[in-house]
Length: 472
Ligand code: C2E
Ligand code: MG
Ligand code: MG
Image (cartoon, rainbow, N blue to C red; front, side):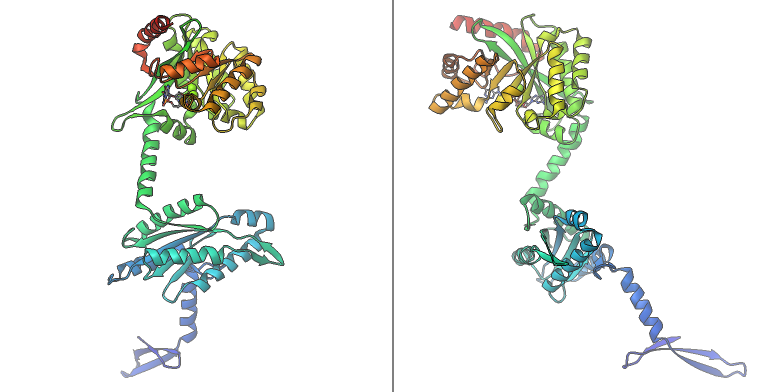
């Protein structure tokens, strides 16, 4: 059997069969229609019905084939395009309008690509383009054009619909030489572009990928850190100036990573918050701190930092109660430190939890006061026992008259509201003298002691009390 493709477009199938009388019969069959419909079926199988564009699977095949071509001098760019606000369009205007928008965006993209380029719809509101022969500079220019031309308002049934896109670009061979590498890297670039805002594009950046990978590794390791006993609490003294005694020891979490060494809480606490394990870490910290404090002189409290995330569940007071009960530490020896971010949302639940903690006899301090979102109205929202004036004010005290004025004003305000004040970050005698002159009740900082491991706590308490008394 043989297929003959005629110049007029017809396809004739020729088969040759023996006849009963020993001869041969040639059968010529016109199969043009069948061939056409097979082709249509094949095309439909790898096309998106709505936009008529290739689908992801076919796009990847095309990309693989393009990458298999000998390189010559040419490079190739993959651009991933994502609509920022499609879900909102769909939800507010309905699916029919959503479909209309997708078709219109596909048409805008199709108009912009050149001959030899490929365009596909690779997700609900995602498109991809193979730009043949484009190096990084050309791909960037192209992506910029896209953002400009595609990300503008569209008329849908007489209504102006706002369209915004992001474009992520990866270029072969520098960013990858296989279809999956290039797609993955364009995806990374796309997430960077999304973070940059409306109608922004980004080229894949190897350094960025390294930092994302590092972050992922940290996340994975952090998930097992507690179980593997890699977390510790160190303690830093907070002294009451007037009595020259240690008022409390602040528990500061440390992560002893097997290969990275000591990871500071400024790095891993935000990760723990994001991946949803801060509750578990916080529960451990409060339990550990209460147990440790039992071995210290009775006048020394233990202060534990809480993350705003820990207030999002209903069990913080239960966790605190359990830590006190299990350790036998009197509630008045436990102090909890919260930051202003907690008060930003001003949720009823937060206030309820804070009240429950206070009713239990635990004291509550407002940490890092004056940074970020400081608003005096927060001081009215809850009767804090203490305000910790952030170290940034203390650091600049010697040079900056404004800082001095702020510290004095906060001290005065706190007094009127019946709250005590702590100055954080006392590093020098000068700092110490200035905050004392400003009227701060308590002091904390490297000048007294850095945070130390639990074993060193009794020694540090005695040493600090002795030194401060001697200096008086
Ligand atoms: P923070 O609660 O304001 O703790 C004070 C931070 O300032 C500590 O940093 C401490 O080591 C540092 N510091 C103390 N004195 C001085 C000084 O004189 N000079 C300077 N430059 N720094 C000083 P650290 O231990 O790195 O902790 C950073 C932050 O991480 C803490 O700030 C707190 O917000 C958070 N954190 C620490 N442990 C925990 C925890 O168990 N749970 C939660 N949720 N957060 C924690
Ligand atoms: Mg603190
Ligand atoms: Mg602080």
